[in-house]
Amino acid sequence: MRKLFIGPLAAIAMTALFFSCQQAPASKQEVVKTPDSATAALPTPLREKVLSAEEQGALTPDMVIAALQEGNNSFVNNDLTARDHSAMVRNASQGQYPKAVILSCLDSRIPVEDVFNKGIGDIFVARVAGNFSNEDILGSMEFGCKVAGAKLILVLGHESCGAVKAAIDDVKLGNITAMLTKIKPAVKNAASYEGEKSSKNDEFVELVAKNNVLNTVETIKLKSPLLKEMVDKGEIKIVGAYYNLKTGVVTFL
Image: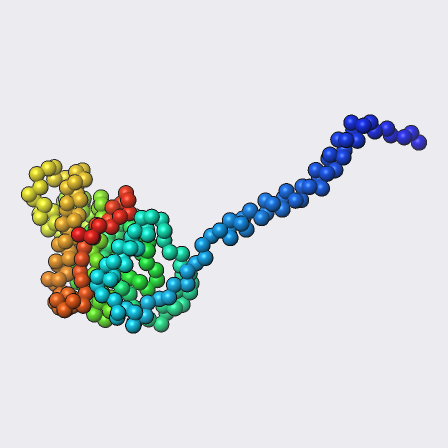
């Protein structure tokens, strides 16, 4: 049989190939480890305790306002609390003792709980385009405060509100027409504005939106003697605020 001769250069190449094949699994193992390292870096969810009746009873309206302002600051700085929602759902199943009732616009760009860095059981949220009050919402607020013990009602308007713009432009469309009559008093209140009174004027839209928030606050007091009495006794406060879509900042009015 004829012997196969392997030259020096071929031998070196084969040796290098052998060792590179032996090292391949180690390289592959490093890649597999990377997701584990990334997972380890994630924050551990907080097992936040749902508010108890005793803790709710110890709150004052001003303490709740301060908590909402602090929560909004966390939201703006992208420092939201990591919560174990599964645990909180189970803990809240026996009852609820929220801090506040928040009446917000329907707008999808305003995630109310996140905006104030609050979790399950912390706040009641009512939503309607244009954040106005009606009989159903007033009843819900009365339940939230008189029955369930919330210490604050917050009416939250926002920048570039579509419902406010529609009210300014006197839109006629289905049930929206009737809905806008709840917002139009805020447009009338801005009659003394000297600039362009149209939905294309951001300054005018903001003025009407803030007027609408303040009108809603007064309407709640006027149409709910129950809530007005609680305000007069210092048991609750009813306040308004304005959300900036560009920054996420909530300004209390």
